[in-house]
Length: 340
Ligand SMILES: NC(=O)c1ccc[n+]([C@@H]2O[C@H](COP(=O)([O-])OP(=O)(O)OC[C@H]3O[C@@H](n4cnc5c(N)ncnc54)[C@H](OP(=O)(O)O)[C@@H]3O)[C@@H](O)[C@H]2O)c1
Image (cartoon, rainbow, N blue to C red; front, side, top):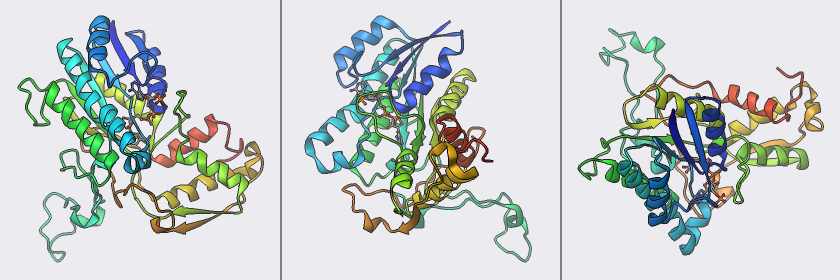
């Protein structure tokens, strides 16, 4: 039986990881959150992990207040500790105890400069349409590949990149900076949604906020920018287990649900699904009209990448985000029972 230590177990993702691994009798799950360990305290991490001796450590703990840490120096210092340095302490503890480390990062480590992103050509393309029809059935995947160079444009993004580097540095047998270190999976995700976290600092996900607004407002303005992918926490938890169980090669992975969209496009789909069948389970059809606006209408302290689709070149893809959203709405009893 493998001992798996899940840290951040009360978080949006952490609670799903606990559920997925608890169903498998091959695993003994140890679930810790902030009250059990402060990952930003190196001594505590070394002592508690050393005492527990896990085979696998999953770090789902993080500081996620993107705007707060942009605007406030104290918050930024905390974000650097939790997102930047703490993953390095966990890596040291994992290495010392010969455990595998799984750590999560974000699309916000990229700048999102669409102009610099290259769409890969189909194999064999001659770059002349007169002699090549390969593009006829080719769906280019424009976005960030696992080995693309990060260049964060927000303080939050910088702290998450520091965390990536600390994991790589401290897990690598030579202590080198190359990402080809040992025994860790670095999983980048974007726009997480699912059941709200159980922890004190729980924030609502975008979809829950939009549903609330749809109930109470006549008009909801939503930013029609920042194209990226959604990630459904239960799907990510299952995929993480698949990666561990199938002993995929260590390194960086991009795991999101299929399809990409702006915030506005996501809100349109949400209201369509939640209103289907009269929206009776949701206390009546959502009446709010959604207005697409530019990011300039909602000035926020932190810059967001305008385009940060994460391309997965290593794993079987997960289902489309719209399918995952349907399941989320059904599970949270927000969707009309007879909707399709
Ligand atoms: N949410 C997103 O949209 C998103 C997007 C991209 C990447 N990610 C990444 O995905 C992972 C999971 O995110 P999530 O949204 O599930 O996070 P979350 O819901 O905020 O959960 C994080 C958990 O970590 C705990 N925690 C915070 N500081 C800690 C510390 N010093 N020691 C121990 N535990 C601590 C939190 O407790 P308190 O709440 O009490 O502070 C909370 O229970 C993170 O690595 C995150 O950066 C998330």
